[in-house]
Length: 217
Image (tube, rainbow, N blue to C red; front, side, top):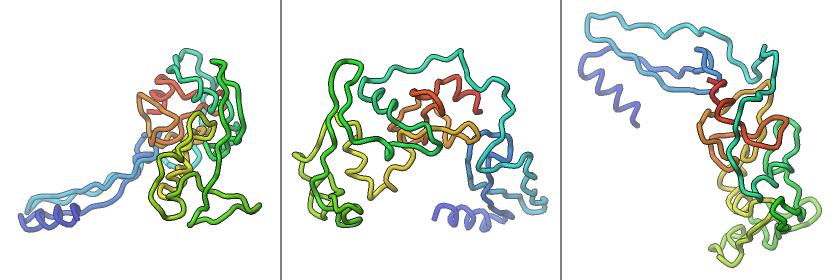
């Protein structure tokens, strides 16, 4: 709607206009970023062309860095529970919170986590291949949420399977980056539960540092 309105206004004012979607990764940015770009030219002026891509952007970026591990970084402090979750994310490429084991773990502060209890049927996905329930709240069966269903201090965050059906199962949260991959979004405050994409180090049980994020720019 906004794009159509913008183009309509430009045309009514006598402008020539065009629009396209450009990939920022083809212009030197080490991130995947698609942006709609509108070009307009006044009457009598030549409508410019979009710039030719400066580099080839692909799903896997080949790096040439001799030393792949940065040593001059400071990572933000995480709670004992978040740190415990990061330690149990597999090192395999593509791993995220969905690969967390549903187990009890002793955290660095001495407390124990609890197993996540699946106590409700899932109206959308049904039962697992073994016949086990998949839902963690009454809302998974189509009824309103019951606050009493909420679970705390679990290795698998209760909130993620609770709302996963509505949000693509929160793919990428607590997700590991890949050495030959790229940042979905570069931020100065990486959070494992943030929506900016994967922020866990490929080989270490921590989030990437601000310095590592800066090097992706």
